Image (cartoon, rainbow, N blue to C red; front, side):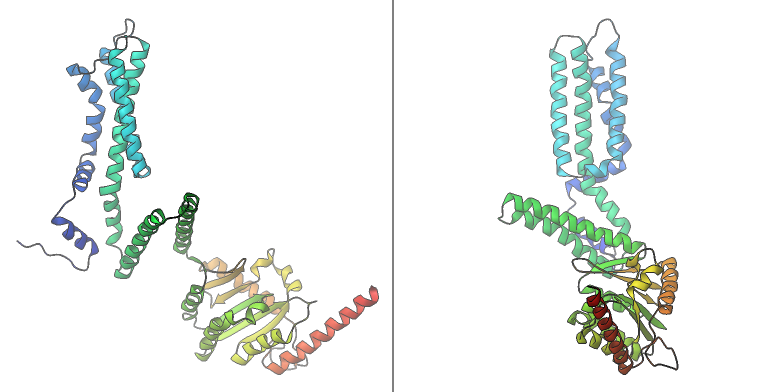
Amino acid sequence: MTRQIDRRNPLAHAEHADAAEIRPEDQFGDWVRQSVGFVAALLAAVPLLTAFIGVVPPPKYSDLPLDKALPIFITCLSGLVFLSLFWAREQLGTIKAAVSGVLLCFVGVTLLIFALVVSPGGLAVFCYMGGYLLALGGAAAALMSGFVRTRERLDTLAKFIAKLTPEQWSSLTRYARTLVSVREHIEAIDIHPASRKALRRSADNLINEHAKMLVKLEAGTLEIRGPVMDDIFQYFLESVQQSFRAISRDDLAYWTSPDCARYLDANRRLIDEGRAVERIFLLRQNEGLSPVEIDAMARQISLGVRVRIAYLEVCTRLVEDGGDLDFGIFDDFAVSFWRVASDRVFRITTSPADCTFHGQLFAKVSGSCVLVPDKTAGDKKLFESVDELQRWASAHAAHQSAVARTAERAA
């Protein structure tokens, strides 16, 4: 009867490919997995068996009857050592653990030989006990290392493979190849040993950083940097049905740079689709604005963005942490944050509590926005034309001049 292979299942392909030639280490791993109790009992029973057949008889110590009690005691300890190593086997899945196990086994056998040739007494008893524990513990460590590195890793991976989509499987295989390739290439390149050590640590750090990002994603929070942040922002923006509201804290340098082009294009597309985009610019009350900065805000008004202006010094009183005053709200299902350090870091949370809190905070800041000069109808805090912005900019510049003159007279 011909076995049918499920070609949609990557694991089926792997099993089919290995069917023609099963590796000895996989056979060994299968045997250990299926017979772990037998293996533990066999290793632990070695002291009893060797004592029974007289290969390594228990040493004598004074008049104590150690010939039966000592092998039983060592057998119990050896069983506990094996079980402890089996529980911690994931930490033993390295070449170093296997090599260490072989060395311990060698030292243990040496002590057992020494226990046979040394005169009966306390030293012989110590070498007998230590020799068996080191020899059997080392053998168990080497056994667990081989088991974890072969069969158990495949078994663990198999649990996830059935749940992966084809796209996830493709990503997983690429990631696995990259992990292996990075380490191999670092070891292969002709560089100074200090550089190689630093690269190894850097690779581990980057891998851990990506793992932390995925753990946060599992909890509904994204934290990313680089050009991909624009793509992620777009994914969330496409789900907006009503409005995207944002507060930009003292960040006009970004809005005057080419970096904001993709971001503004995404805003424009949302407006063209009939959704609202509203942005509050938080500015410092006692700092002047350059024509370029005013033009940056005017450009957003021309795009159809609902622009408001508030003073940072006023709004920082609304929150305990002023860092909360730079975020965007996607309807009521997600909140995004920009953090500026050495570069811009983009973070999104889908926590309902965060959405509610920042929605209320946006409303508070809206209430603290400046009035549009000479506006008598409609929303008096909403800049609906470039002319309205220019009038405010003139008034703001006049205020700055007055402040400067007052400071000069005081000086």
